[in-house]
Length: 150
Image: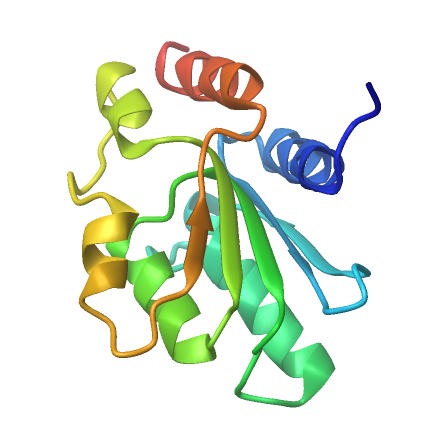
């Protein structure tokens, strides 16, 4: 069986995470399936707590698209988005978020994470987006475990 598009894009997100030296990588693709942004977490080098991989990818995509709306775009991220990243995705009108490891996986690895699953915040939005978790789950959990058990 050949790899599906979500798995191929997740491999790019994993690559972005590895390049950033963290467990966190994100890719955004447009409606045509073209990769628009590939970013890792830069919280430490940028000295900015908002520089999560998803936020970095959203900022890059907004600049490239010259639009505040990313309707129809897909965000692929190695770890389920935190509340900040999910809220920014909702405000950006991202159509779909695909993630690998979940909030529980980060907590189980000893990482800091707000223990609020994305689906709960998503359901409170007047325009919920589509969430799909568990894509390349094992590979993403391994990334998380390596990051938090250095």
